[in-house]
Length: 194
Image (cartoon, rainbow, N blue to C red; front, top):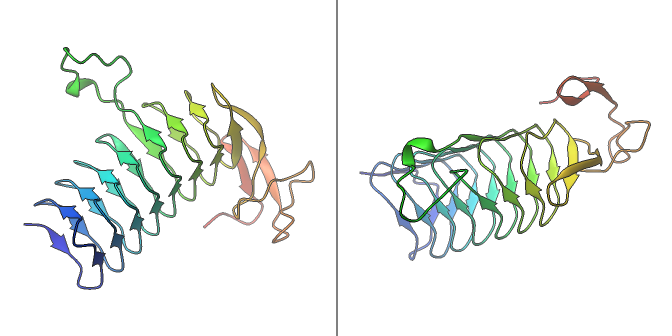
């Protein structure tokens, strides 16, 4: 049996499998499918034709836009944005005729990340906190915290603040005035990130 909060919104065409959990205030829209042993965090939104699971955790406040599949092995922390038709893979060398479910490589998308439309995230990578992945980028390796990456393969072309604003050499957010400094994992606010 699935566990669906009474404050969640589930469209009549959506499917919530037995063993799935949909938390408070989450919204699951047209033709979306939440598979078994998957948790959709409080306040998260699954757009039209989204598939999540099995065995996936979607954090609180995530927005997964239309036509995205989040497969086993992918974890989305809180406040992640997945743009329309972005892609997650779960096997590095797939073949239709070779069973490789025991080779799923985990992918971790950290808090506050934004993934642009039609971007592809190759399995086995970690995308650092508040990073921004440009539309159509192909992520083949780990992405540092607050990095702005674009292209195929994705490469860092700059840094972004917690609010998604591009930073200049001063590393001060033009929107909030928050200051950043370079660390071994990318950027960090001089006053710690949430």
